[in-house]
Amino acid sequence: MIKKFLVSLAIVAVFAFYSDIKGSEKQETAILPKNNKSSLSQSTPSSTPAPADTSTPAPVSIVNIPGQSASPTPVPSTPTPTPSHQGQYKDGTYTGPVADAFYGNVQIQVKISNGLISDVQFLQYPNDRNTSIMINSQAMPMLQQEAIQSQTGNVDIISGATDTSNAFIQSLTSALSQAK
Amino acid sequence: MKKTELLMDMPVTVEIADEAEKQDVETVYDYFRYVDETFSTFKKGSEISKINQGKLKISDSSQDMKEIFAKAEETKKLTLGYFDIRKDTGYDPSGIVKGWAILNAAKILRKKGYRNFFIDAGGDIQIDGQSKNKNWSVGIRNPFNRFENIKILNISNRGVATSGTYIRGQHIYNPFNKDLPIKEIVSLTVIGPDVYEADRFATAAFAMGKKGIEFIERLKDFEGYMVDKKGMATYTSGFNSYLYNNGKNN
Image (cartoon, rainbow over all chains, first blue to last red; front, side, top):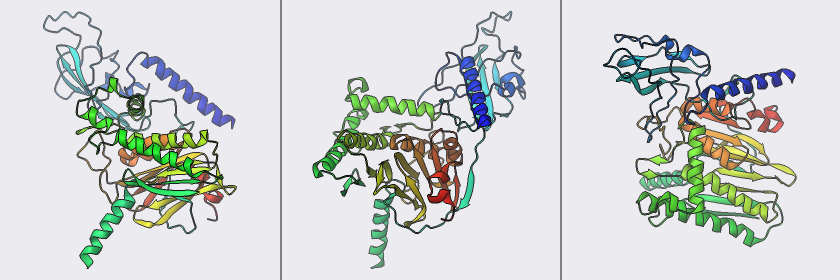
C-alpha cells in the first residue's frame, strides 16, 4: 500500500515537473520524457551539417494534428555573425535518433529555413501518451491476454460495436435472399 | 419496465428496475429524438448539417452544439488527436454525441428519482444501481458471432461502450493515417465512470490500434477488453474485478 502510494507520488512529481518545463506551451503538444535522449542534442544528420547550438535544444514537441497546421516552435532570435541567416541554425532537414520515451519511441525531424525552425515532424512518437492528469498510478501497463471463449449465462444487457445488429440483419437478409 | 425502440438507426433500450411511470420512459425517447434532429449529419435540416453547409456559425449555434464542440476539442487533446470530429465531409460529432446523450438521458431519469436502471443505445450503456438487489449483468458480444457473449460483467454505476469495425466495415479510422484501415483489432470494450467517458475513450483508443488498450490501462478508473482479428483478447489489469468471482471458477 505504502509502495503504491510512493509510486503514485513519484508519478505526480514527475508529471508536475513536466508541467513545469512545458510551462505555457500549447495544450496539444505531446509530452516528452524529461530524459533528454529524445531531444535534438543527439541528432545525427546524414549529410547536412548539425545545428549550430546543440547544447540547449529547442523544446520540440509539436504534434501535427490533422486539420490544424502546427505552429513552429519559437526560437530565440539571437543574431548570428552570418548575415545570410536570421536565426542560429543552418538550413536543412535534420532527423533525430530514435529515443525511448518509456512507453514508446520518439523520433523527430526538424526543418530549418532561414535559420529558424520552420517545421517539426514526429516520425515516431508514443501515440498512447495521455496528456491529462488521469495517469494511472501504475507505472507500467500490466496487460493480460487470453483466447476469447464463449460464455453461457443470461445477461441483462449486451455491449457490442455500434450498428452491428442492423448491419448483421441487413447482411443476413441479403444472404438469405440469394439463397432462395 | 423495459422498452426498446429503433432510434438513430439503432436499438435503444431503457429498463427501469424501480417502479416506473410509462411517461418517464417516454421522456428518454423524446430526448433522443431531439438529439437526433439536432446532431444527425444524415438529416439535411439538422443544426450540424447547417453548420457543415456553412449556413450557421458554431458561435451562433445552440448551447448543446457549443458544448459538443467544446467536449470534442477537449477529447481531441486528451487523446493526442486520435479523437477528431473533423472529417473530409465536414464535422461529424457522432463519436461524442452518443455517449453524451445517453448520460444526459440517465440524468433525466435520476432527476425523476430513479436509481436503478440502464439505458442502452446500440451497445453503449449507462448502468445505474442494481436489478433485484444484484448488479446488472452485461455481456460483451463476440465480434465473430453475434449470438455469443465472450465475457459477462457485473456492473453498477458505470458506463460500458464498445467500438469495433466488424461487419459494417471501417467506420472508425485513424486520423493520422486515414488510408490505413484499422484491422488489427476488431472490438474494444471500455468500462468507465460513465457512458460518456467510456464511449469517447473507446472510440479514440480503438483508432490507436493495438496500442489502444495500453492507453486505457493508463487511464484512472477505466478498464478495457480488446479482441484482435485472431480472436485473442488483451485486457487491462483491473478488468477481472468486473467479472463474477473476479473471473475465478467462472
